[in-house]
Length: 114
Length: 110
Image 1 (cartoon, rainbow over the protein chains, first blue to last red):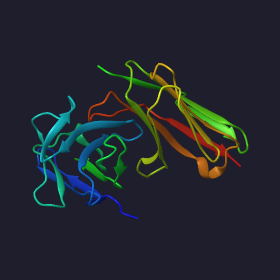
Image 2: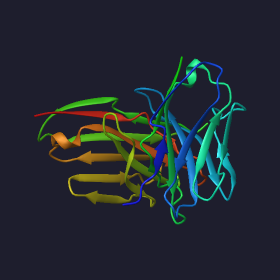
Image 3: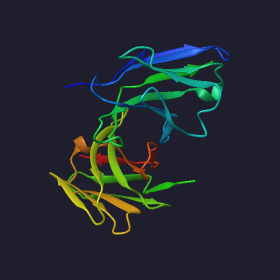
């Protein structure tokens, strides 16, 4: 069964450093998303991406965040200057054309900012 | 902004007992999805409801979407230990943004 893959599974970084989280969505999906989940809390929408541009973003997704689809398969989330409060699990998700609100999640990248 | 509230936060049940979690949106939704997240895992899609008053069943799970499309519920009949995890509702008003409820964590005692 096709799945969303995310790398790395765990990223440790120093405050102020840049990190790039990588995702390979399901191959025939057209809608891509990043979510954040702070430990024990709810899943928070960050950004959606469709047709090579951001389609919607939340208030969390400020200037320190950016997304990119550098080639036909990868979808990345860059955090420019990490803060302690960016420590969380980051999930990538993708959706098929016929159901953009049905999301298939990757296993996540746990980001620890020290 | 749009909010999705979910209750209860936690539920402890004895195996074989029923379980229900409720979801309420501050705005009318276009659709609602339910996800299950096992401890240490990622959200896994269970079902989507689109129509007002819709009821869908998956084995022991029954999902309802309210007539006003502002609330929803998930009911599990005769819980099993494999049902443990956090159940999230997630609603959309038609755009790309999906708002998740805080989730209900289900504990099942054998």
